[in-house]
Length: 243
Image (spheres, rainbow, N blue to C red):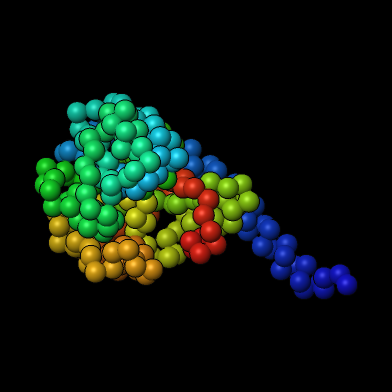
């Protein structure tokens, strides 16, 4: 039995929304903010555990960031690893990243990366299975010229042709989820120090509540959190992690 006229209208509207949003997102994807020299040291900090399969693409995309190429002395590139046994650490060192091996626990590692490096003006936190267009970091850091900005998070899209059209509708232009994505964000050091993670959540099924939602709520009391549409791409994962 065919669809009713009402159902066809709804389906058509949904397809128009997806198509129109994707066209607009595609235009926004290529937009580049002016290239501005950071006013302090930016620590780009990658978090990994047994991710040899993915980390090379991540680190390569970081080294290709145009702002790092333009102002290399402003950046410190680090990998915080939870004791990988698959060669992840060797890959990170081969790419010239400073490697810090810690006890497993992502929230503990993220806290350590802030407390141990007070010289960082901004901490850029990324997951080892994530990669970026070459202007991603330029667009992220551009927002910190405004003193009320305490953090920037960006669109996160799963790198799968079937999922990306849907993801751009939900994550293309607005942070409906009110999250600071742990896989791709930047936070000012002074504000991060006031809002370290509760490590009792580390490794638990609901860790994302602390890492992305409660963290967002705490940071928002200190200033503005910017949602930058320039996407970070991460590996395709199970339905459990889609939204």
